Image (tube, rainbow, N blue to C red; front, side):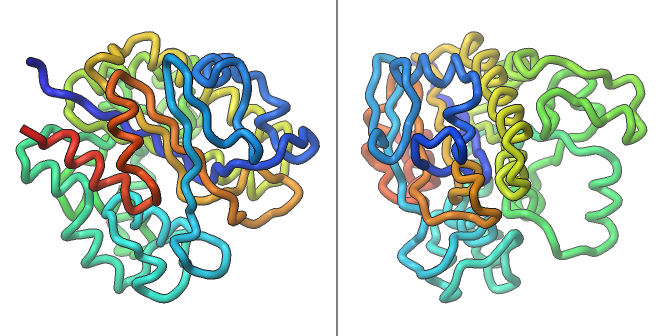
Amino acid sequence: MRSPKVVLLFLDGVGIGSRDPARNPFFRARLPKLKSLLGGGMFHRRKARITTRQAILAPVNATLGVRGLPQSGTGQTAIFTGVNAARMIGRHFGPYPTTELRPVIKERNIFRTLQQAGKRVVFANAFPKQFFEYTNSGTRRLTVTTLSCMFSGVPLLKAEDLRVNRGISADLTRSRWPEMGYPDLGEISAAEAGRHLAGIAREHDFTLFEYWLTDHAGHSKDMDFAVDVLERFDAFLGGYLENTDPARSTTILISDHGNIEDLSVKTHTRNPVPCIVIGSQRSAILAGIKTLTDITPTIIRFLTHD
């Protein structure tokens, strides 16, 4: 029997909001793939649990039992380590993890644990040379995902990987790479990027892709930008799923906190976040996920069970 695979699509700053199209771009954007997965509709506060023949969606409380607005540093630590970072330090913090969270990320991140179990892992985002110049400058302002890779010896993908379709641009379409010094890396469609992700995932037991433009769009309060960001991701999701075997690969979509679902405010929200699981094992996977801290333990159990 072939070993199972998990692809984790992490969307920064996506919560479950109201049905108001004046504030929630999910009700303005054209999202055919997501809607087809969810039975033709879209999730909202009064429709936060959806089960179809393809997927299951459930709301996940992102507050971690701590007052205040959830933040990326603590929320992402919870997702990628299974540790309630906000409770550990007594507050929500972001966008980067605090110094006291670094040992937790180093020892308990999902890449490290899966590698120790002999699994093949990849962080599919590709980074330009400017990012590596930034990290080499000695900065400590690094995200949980990049820190997890650095602490675990997981290579951060570069332009060379993107060039041969073994990496994914953070914006999906590579639109900014020429102006960053890569004139040969022309723009592609988001759907093509999704097909590339499917190819990457076939070669690994665990694949992570991070899409942070959703949080950026939420902070911008720009409806047109937010709609574009969501429609781009929907096309990407379609390209990926159309080239993925749901009997072998389980796909999980998760976020760290709300934001883009309410453009009437510039801040994050305390809304629950959607957890969408796609694949033949979706019921078993989602049964183990109640909070953000359940994501990593659930994936590890699924990929390492005998």
